[in-house]
Image 1 (cartoon, rainbow, N blue to C red):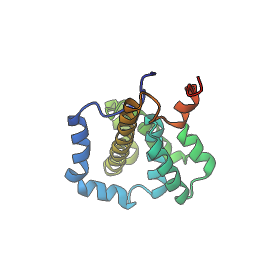
Image 2 (cartoon, one colour):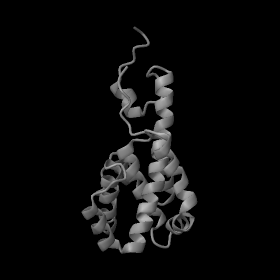
Image 3 (cartoon, one colour):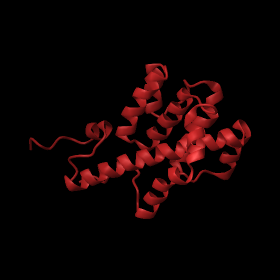
Image 4 (cartoon, one colour):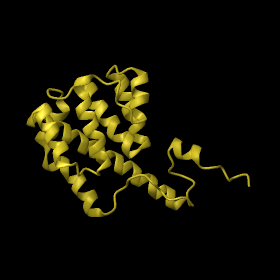
Length: 174
C-alpha cells in the first residue's frame, strides 16, 4: 500500500486547537467573512490557494462551486486548483502567494513573509486574511483526515483524490 501523502491532523491537540479557534475568535471570524475587508471573490481565491496546497478533494469541489458564484472565470479556477495564481488580480497576488507559503509551512509562515503581508494590506486586513486561511486549513485537514481513515480502513482503496486515483494502477482485475 502506498503511503498517504496529504497533510492530516497528527494529534488531538492540533485538532482541538483548530476546532476551538472559531469559538475563541468569533468577532475576527465574523469580520473576515462579512466581506468588508476581503471580498467574496478574494476569499474564494484564498480558499482555493490553500486547498491546492493541502489537496483536499472536498474543499476543492466546494470552493470551486463558490468561486463560480463569485464570478471567477472557470479557467482561473482550474489554474487555482493546480496551484497557479497568476490569473488573479494583481492586488491580490501578494496575499495568494502568502497563502500558499502559509499552507506549505503548515500555518507557520516565515516572520518576514507575514510582515510583508501586514505591510501590503495593513494589520486589520492581514488579520482577516489569516483568519480565512486558518478556517480553510481546518476544513482541509478535517477532509484529509477523514480520507486517511477511509484509506487505512480499506487498505488503500478508498479516500483518494482524483489525482491519486490516476497515479495508482487499478489492481482489481489482477
